[in-house]
Amino acid sequence: MLSHTEACADAFDGIARLIESATRIALCAHVNSDGDALGSELALAQIIAARWPGKEVTCLLADKTVPRIYRFLPGADAFVPGDAYDGSPDLFISVDLSQASRLGSGEQVRARAAKTAILDHHPCEDPDADAYVVRPDAAAAGVIVTEFAQHLGVAVTPDMAQNLFCAIATDTGRFQYQNSDAEAFEIASYLVSCGASPSDVSLNVYQSFNLSFLHLKSAVMGRITTFEHGKIAYSYSTQADLARTGASLDESDGLVDVVRSVAGSEVALFLKEVPGGKVRGNLRSKSGRDISGVARELGGGGHKAASGFTIEGTVDDALSLALPLLQRLFRDDAPQGCDAT
Image (cartoon, rainbow, N blue to C red; front, side):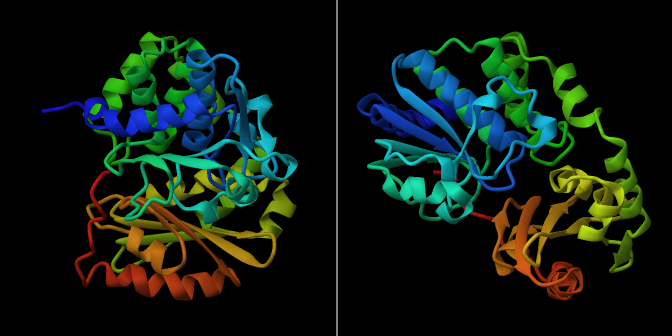
């Protein structure tokens, strides 16, 4: 059986040709950037610089700032907010997403680009790009970017390895989620051999919480509620919580795992108020139930076991929309996503 690197060889070659013919290249991941998005984007820029010296490569940021816990990543200080980039790149590469609408301030930069490419692991039936690798069976975009480096014959440096290990470790929930397959462990081991430090990733991402965040976490834990005989667990945070505790909005992204940890629960929902009268929802599945369809019905998307959405309204509004859909999962069979490209 072909390895994924061999199976994607033609697609990788197509992306390489686009890079080869481009002078100005812009990379961008999705809004609400996580460790996979940021680490994969930074590593891809470093890979391009190593393979094609002299290319003008810019790492765009879909959001305004890099979340505090990811500022340790090598090269993180080089991110440029998308709305601060006024050029028209020869090539725009979307990393860890296939939908242009999730590029935030990077979407207009993509619209100005002569050519586009995608490296992603989210399900997408019809990727809109000149070349792409979209492989939903990959545990993280970092897996695909690592395999791209291997395909190109690029020697993975310690900086690349650190970024890519963070990408994989965070998207697998420290190798605790259902997507923690043999490939993820194999790639992670390879990255450690290239110089990645798992302890540094753990220290910065999982062991450096501000006291304000811990107070916020306490409030969220105190609100956990269950439905469907304990199979669905949910909690939430508000703007008032942030003001009271002093915690920042980006710090609350991992709180869905607090809800997910409830014994007996199969599906977790964490809701948080965000500026502009909106609520962002994070969904996690601990079983084989596919929660991506729920996210899509609410205007979002993601994977079978990890998805999200954003709606206009209050926490109560979001709960009234999401809860019936989640309850339906325990009465209907859910679709299982799409094949890899």
